[in-house]
Length: 66
Image (cartoon, rainbow, N blue to C red; front, side, top):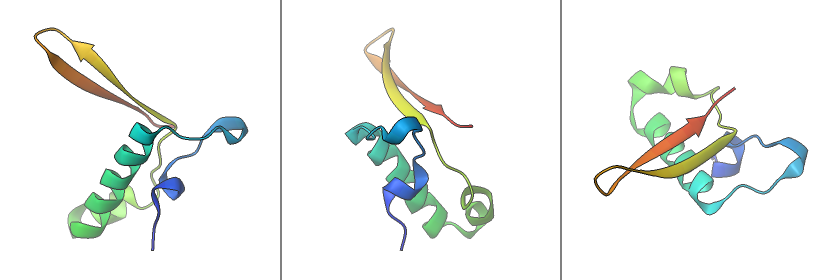
């Protein structure tokens, strides 16, 4: 079984943020629940994920991938 830590690769053993773990878990959930995405997502991981405020009280999620 996957854990969110397997989907996050950070330099120098930096601990992932809670938000990054949430994003990684969402990727795992998508991978395991949808066969169309499984092959595309199984080898993918993130380096960083941040949430940014944008105009009109909206937020954007920026996901850094290698």
